Image 1 (spheres, helix red, strand yellow):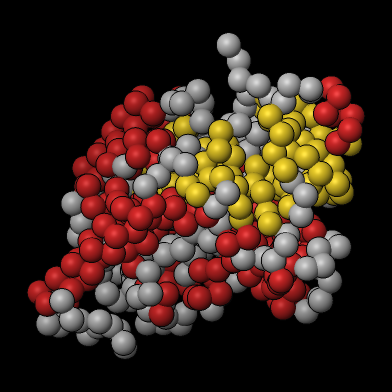
Image 2: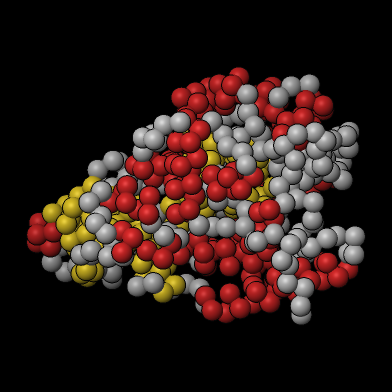
Length: 462
């Protein structure tokens, strides 16, 4: 017997298409939104629906985080202040301190720590880009989030992104990456009624040979899946691609046929105008990872990318999963860059992080609140001092909102969080175990590597 519909009544419904229905209701039936409209009319139409009080609250589409690396919560408080240089000489990699090694079970715990934060900040869909995703794919699936899992491949040995020097080709790395992608796709694509999908990731242009890019594009076609890549992330990457290929990174991808409307290019913050035009002509999506961009002291030209034809979405990238911070930081950074105190609008920033993000990951029936759309939504408590008076709900939440304002999260019509309590994860156990793992890993790294200097303020006590 099918579950009864659920009716959230007398809330502000922020649809995601620029409109807001005040003191209205929304009905969920199964995994879809059945109706949005006046409370009286919907209560008469769905008399058997479970009522959920929405007075003093807003219902929004959930956030789609289209670029993150969940186990990198391990580096929280450390890597944010260890950015690579923006001018030569370039060191390679994104930090001068290596990440401590973790066992598979430990990586899973750190990934789940990120999931806890993601859900608490209103994320309903997430693209995870990493190598070895099978270590924690099952745990992510069990969380209830909508997922696009992008297993990573590369074939440059003994180097990191932005590393100067020759491209040392290792075909074995390419073969292993392609095999991981194929296995993950066979095991997880379409899992949980289609809530879990599998794509592929090329690590970065300076980490992938032309042959590997061609093999990945062919595999993408056979698997019929999205692809992602770190693109123009740091200036060292631009220099390395110029050194190896004689062109700019986006020109290199275009030359090798890797650009497409099903590509999500992450970062795009060290990009020449001709590259923006190439990416836009291809119809690719761009993940505007605003919070990490601000921490790195770099920013993409979002308006130029959008004008060129790119679909702008948003991601949190490393160390943090707070999409409330991502949306606000993105709007602020782009206003500063444009020297425009009015654009982008809060509504535009929300669109990047909701509807556009869902489109980018290949789920166009999500990221909006309309009849027939996926029931992926969040409920915001507007009765907080910093949100009163919420006369313009979208503007108020983008400018002043906090993750703690997110009261409930739903994916496919299922509550992942309700009344501020996670429903699918043991939050206290995850937080405690992640703290133990991270402290042990970092203290072990610095104890075993006297050549490394801990960052200021690091707690070395056991």
